[in-house]
Length: 247
Image (cartoon, rainbow, N blue to C red):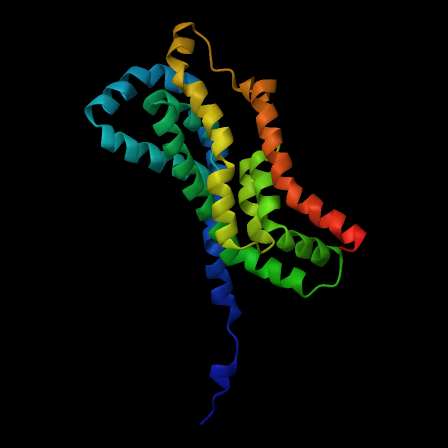
């Protein structure tokens, strides 16, 4: 009996299927960038705020589910409007619940795009880096040794785009459990700030203004966040010092 057909690898179909989720996400992201950026705005929120508040008051649970679903889609497909969605959470649900709903939706969306990238391109790229002998392998080894610290820094540093912090870890093979943990807790500080801005959004709209997202860079806000960044980086600093001293 000829078993040659069973021993012959068939990478084409499996490879295409593995890359399909990420390809779909990237395609939707590109389409969404050109078609939605003029619609998911604070002007749209201002024009529809009374209708949103009325719907929330009449269908609170449904509004919560709809909000989380929409925010999830925005993050999972890297669509424009994440900041608008975060502020809307505070506007509709207040600081505590708004932060909880924002963090839940953003975390689930981030985990979705991470898994999509990991199953496809990330799996292939991580394997190639692992079998290489160059700088990339050394960087990957250093990242794996300090995953929690690096992932927390990527979440806490405001200059790192959210979609980069979702995709890059998947492409270099970090553990999903570490990614999920640092995502949930790492986005809380920024989530609180954006939700807090949304709590006072009604008054801002009444003045004919848009919310000032530059609040994130105010010293009283960015200071504590940078302090958290220092705490996240401390384990790496301690390891580096111990290595130099031979401890």
